[in-house]
View: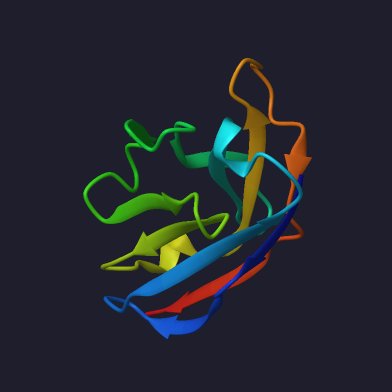
Length: 118
């Protein structure tokens, strides 16, 4: 599966953005999708993930209650709705996929930059 992340941009604190992760290839619905981010000078960190059925989601503590991950298997797209953005959310955001029976994310998108100004 190949992934293409989009939707990043420059926003002000308190604004919202929705990131998209479009997948090509077969059997998107069998892949769990994760969003990760890398802030300037920091390591990549987990943001959120969603199971292949969409029935369960998990979030980093730093974004829980503000971000929502979802997916549309019919369109082979996953989303990350980001509300109440903070300057510390500034990062390059990556989507990743792992086959539902695997433990590691083997497929990564190219990243989309989110910049939140104060």
